[in-house]
Length: 98
Image 1 (tube, one colour):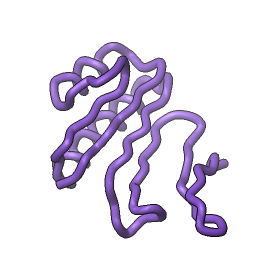
Image 2 (tube, one colour):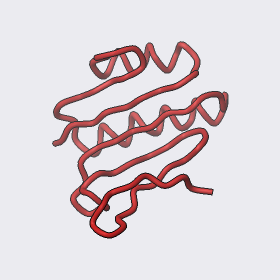
Image 3 (cartoon, helix red, strand yellow):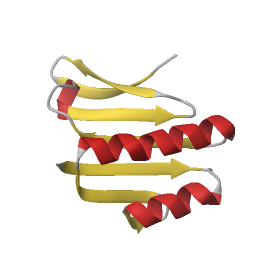
């Protein structure tokens, strides 16, 4: 179990309602769960991805601890611009995917 954070931008109200029912909203459009397992995380992401596919407005970014990824952080994106973590000369940077 690890900390999961989701940040939304310009999405429909139902996204915010759903996320507020499953996670703690610590600031407007910023949601965290201090102990969420991978199964719950993937189910929440599937709901968000399905809804975003039906109404592709705004963007959603989910971040969680993943020791197998660059910097130990997993990132999932919906909307634009998608981003990836890359390591360059020992620094972790975000890169816009094209």
